[in-house]
Amino acid sequence: MIRGRWLALAALSGLLLASGMQGRYDSTVNYFGDRNAFVSLPSGKTLRVLSFGYRNLAADLLFIWSIQFYSTYNITNRFDFLERIYNAITDITPNYREPYLIGSLIMVLEANDVPMALRLLEKGSRQNPGEWIFDNDAGYYCYKYLKDYPRAERYYNQAAAKPGAPDFLKRMKAHLVYMSDDPQTAYRMWLDLYRNASSVLEKDSARNHLYQIKAENDLPQLQAKVEEFRQRFRRYPASLAELAAAGFIRAVPSDFYGNEYLYDPLLGKVTARRTFRWKKH
Amino acid sequence: MKPSIKGIAINTFRESARNKMFYLLVFFGILFALSSKLVSFLTLGDAMKVLKDTGLAAINFFCVLIAIFTGINLVYKEIEKKTVFNILSKPVSRDEFIIGKFLGLALTMLTALGAMAVIFFAFIALSGGGFDPGIALYFFMLFLELLIIVALSLLFSSFTTPILSFIFTVSLYLIGQIMWTYNEFRAFITVPLWRKFTQVLYYLLPNLSKFNIKNDVVMGVAFQPWTILFSVLYALAYVLALLALTILIFRRREFQ
Image (tube, rainbow over all chains, first blue to last red; front, side):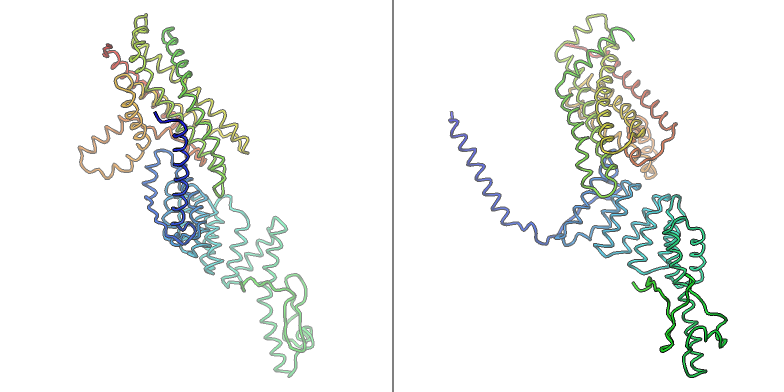
């Protein structure tokens, strides 16, 4: 019979040898270098069947795994499977909100693929007709990244029409009409929001937009009248009041806050006191 | 209830409750349900949803294991250890023996599920969630599902070995969970004979997917009262059929 001390020695030697081999193995593998990932993922419908009644759990695990996967930046081809992974998760549990929202965020910010994000969000909206958040996010991505204001406006329209949609969606919609260069409609919409505002924030937002739209409408007209004055009298008017007294304008217009526009008689330049540079981002 | 059935039921419950495997599975069920908190830390967004999903899945999984493991052994062990002779030599019929065994197993499942449910509700409350009646409804539906599983394992246990009983019960459990796919796939079955055959199988095999409402409960889906009522009646009818079949087989069984 083998003595106990020999057995203990054998166990210790075995462990030491195994540790040494693990070290040698590690030296052959570049854990942190660029690497490719091969993802073999069955379709969402198949996974739904294979989950054998644990479909929420399957979707949760796949979603959590995807978060870790897309946080591993050294996997160079990780975006190749992005749409398939999030389509699979959302096929397993079509009512699970987070995969649509987080998935589209990854598509936009990490993969720089806004159309892919819009496809996922449109799917979310189709699967959950009562939810406004998917159209809201789609509208935002169109607005922010594609600068496609009419399309963004359509998404916001859909979102605002859904039950429980927050008030800011109406403001966003009106803002997008303004951004789409339709000042008259935008002015009407903002005036309506201004008159029916239920909060200070809403009222301020509406007032600022009305100010900007009015200024963008008034200033070119005033500037044209100043130019007419200069052509007739070979000098700029001393003030806007002189422009009115000479009959070029009926009265000195005021901005939406009730103040007169600023006028520089040396340069003949009419400007607004405030400028909101929404169109310059 | 007849005293003989009651006696067998209570003894079955005691025997199951003394089983180390029972405690081990209940312990792991609770442990996994509570460890759902760790999983919820890894997600983004609604952590409570993940916590409920994982916790309910753990309870479901371990309750099914308890039902299968206790069910497949009970009758077989009585026959193997020849204790069945002692019982049947008394004024206890074979029918009463099976019914008593089933009721004892049902009581065991009720205790295990009840313990897990109470701990899970307390855990949800401690994690900041409120009482969700939908989850209570799910536990009730799970209990009905467990009754069918127990009846199935009892049926197989009455005529075959525990290993085969385990394979049969697990297979039927898995099939029962994906029975909903039949309604999606039947349109693709064009041969009339196959269509008839699959239809017969669909109605014959246990359809357990209807009891699995945990996914919908967590997503806040509303249930029709009729759907729940028909599920309850289905479970009762199916258990009745399985018990009748078990009794029929057990009556013909010859002990050596």
